[in-house]
Length: 540
Image (cartoon, rainbow, N blue to C red; front, side, top):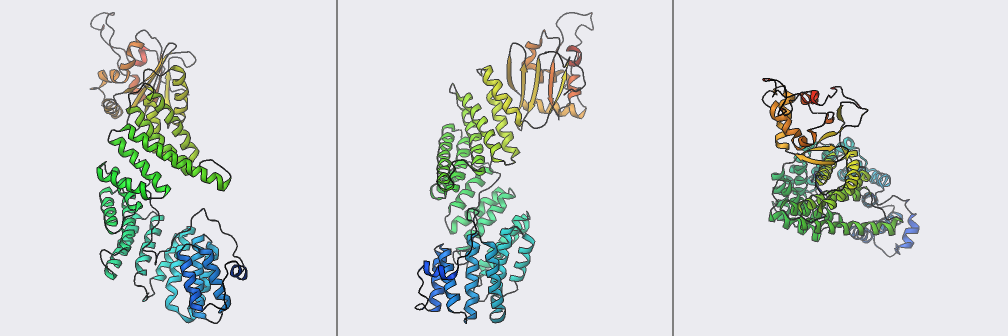
């Protein structure tokens, strides 16, 4: 269920951290320094040089990056002769632009800083290389980012011996984006080793590093190690991100334990809206695996409220009140969990609610434009299971089946006695963990779930050509639920999944007729193909 583990970026600490810009922030032109100075009331004549720099640092720490840049612009205008401090000012300005998503301006300011430092303070150029790596990472230039990190490592960083750890952590992120997860994990472990040497094995920066390790281990599906890394992170510092990942990893490791629920509840209580939604999905999964359908529905209701709040906020800001692609995808995940919960219930309309949930889930997944074949297959399977309920009305059956089968992967191999004539039909559908049979004639239509733990080994033997031992049981396994309806039928339409051994199935012997024929041929059964006069050529 949780093939994508939620992980926000977290740096080493507030002093060292270089945050990443968010896509919601759009670049806009830098205002002239004079206008900014007037807007923010900066009295350059009265301010001492270091006071301006300290004020810029305080504003940036408070996430007021525009105001910080206005202060730095005032400094640059007032003190053009202080070359060393100008190098610092341009570097700070570059970092602020990076935070705002102004990558081109950040690159320009960073280069101005580097040019000044080259002549006055070359040992500080490592910081410029590090920031260049961050910018390149954000731009998707991963190889160039690694080149900048390689250069950054050549500098001593005497003033801050923890910066090499931040560089290693940044390398871990870059390698992750390159899908080099082993190299990313190696870099994250290197970052931890540096912090342990410089400070201690319980230093606060290790919390974020362990969380990065846990994230990478989760991607590699090493759930037990991911759990240990999350626990190590939480031992140093509580965080919603680590609690969320801990709960997800425990669930993925088939441990729907009290520890998992406690961690997810903490993430839900203390995290951002995005984390609350992810935690809600995981808690719904926990309730499901502990056999509590009403707990699942309570969590999905809570998630719906969070999504509605997000949509309302977007409507005010953007003039639209429609979910974006991520919200559609969340809705699809939520409806999958709801469908499973409804199918666990015994109320009169639970199967109808399950059908509706699957319908909404597949529709939301389609609108999200995300390629998640696993979630699509899971939703489809729940929908087909809901259709097996004996009280499903024919109109509802036809409506939902037609929609569900739009999402069925592959094509069926179709065989018939006469493709142009109306004939009773049996179609088989195989999903990840179930096999279904659909019967349809002029009088009745219904779907049933076959015993897939029996059917699949039989199909495997038929595929391998070693079918003699199963020939006389295979017909019953596949066609047993429909046999009474086929008793007096002379023609038949059949549909099999592409992977099934259709020709071998058509040759399976049917149940012998009780009377008729001359002994000893009286009990010899006819193959399916002959009994129903089926043409063994596939038709479209």
